[in-house]
Image (cartoon, rainbow, N blue to C red; front, side, top):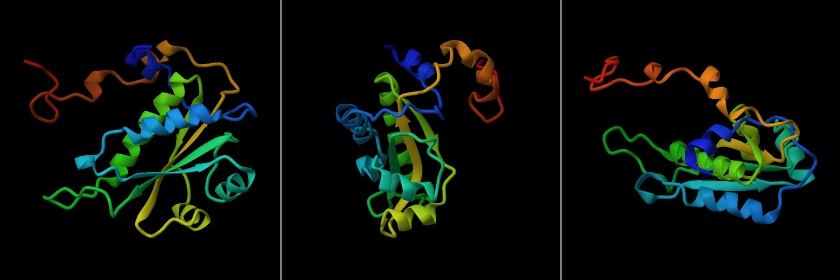
Length: 178
């Protein structure tokens, strides 16, 4: 599959079949997160895999994961992350987000659905999953086999704003490429 087709095929899935994700698929998804680029190659992304009933029950205290059979808590290690020298911006959350994107796209290529979840209580996550102070839960990636049919790949023509809404040339707000 070419990249643009893969990117346009990805969708947020909020209804999953009661079917486990195979170990081989999980390992491919995790490998995609492992090889994701990170600031100064510091590799600050950390993953907590949840797929057992007890873990899902603890997770339910903090977030709705739409009954996905596999959940990856994507975390950032602030001890490992690169900090920008000019203003000390810690890019750990960016590293974790790039890894999440890689894993989400790998899941799509494998025929799995996913949804990126940011609406969760980080304090509950830290407590329930024993995260040390320097480990921040950044997002949750729910993965599984979609219960509903896939959305049309060409839906982005209507669902997404045109490029002119995002692109400036030379200086912010200049919309012409002269």
